[in-house]
Image 1 (tube, rainbow, N blue to C red):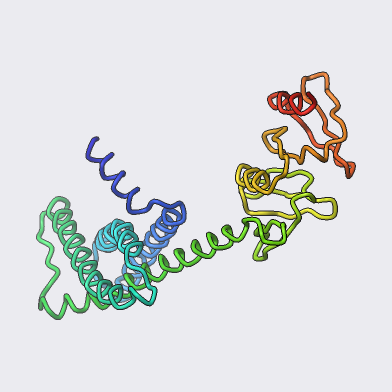
Image 2 (image 1 turned 60 degrees about the horizontal axis):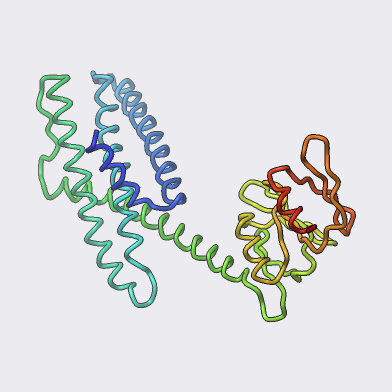
Length: 286
C-alpha cells in the first residue's frame, strides 16, 4: 500500500498541473481505443486468411504495449518541463530528446516483452519470443516509438505554450497607466475604469463582470477579481457566495424574512445578499 502511495505521489510530481493530468487521461483513453481497434483488426485479418489464432493473443500483445506507453507519458512530461525550446535551450533540448526517445523505446520494448513473457508463461505455459535479429527488430520498434514520443512531446510543448499565453494575459490584467483595468474576455482583452464596476457574479470558472453599460464574461476567480479591484482602489465587498459589489454603488439594502437581503444598486440592479455576509453590509452602514 505504501508503495502504491509513493508511486502515485511520483506521478503527481511528474504531472503537477491539471492540464497535464487531463492530457494524460486523453492519451490513455486514445491508447486503449487503439488497442481495441488493432486487436480486432488482427483477429479479422486472421479469420479472412483462415489462420488459426488464439483470440486472446492480439489483446495481450496490444495491451502490454499500451500499458507502458501510458506509464511512460508522465516521465516524458517531467522532462519536457525541464527542457525549454527557447533560443538558449533549443540545441540542448533537441539533443536531449533524441537520447530520451531511444530510452523511451528501450523501456517500452523491454517492458512489454517482459510482461508478455510472464503472461504467456502463466496462461499458455509457453515461451514468448520477440526479437529474431536484434538490431533490425530494435530499429523497427524504435521507428514506431519515436513517432509516439514526438507526438507526446509536441502535445506537451503545445500545452506549455497555451499556459504561458494564459499567464501573460493574466499579467496584463494589472492596472494600466490610464487608470483602467484589463481583463481577459474570451480571446480578447477588455478595459474598464475601476469606478465603472457595479457588481460581479460567479459563473463556474468565469465571472460575470457588470458595469453600467455592459456585462463581460471574464476568466478569473472571484477572489482574484476582488483583489484586483481592491488594489485599484474600489471599495469592493462580498455580499453572497456568488456576488461581490462596489460598495459605493449601493443605494439600499432590503432585509428579507429568512435573514437574507436584497441590495439595490445605482443602475437599478438588484443583487442578493446572504445572511452569512450581512456583517459586511452592517459594517458598511455603520
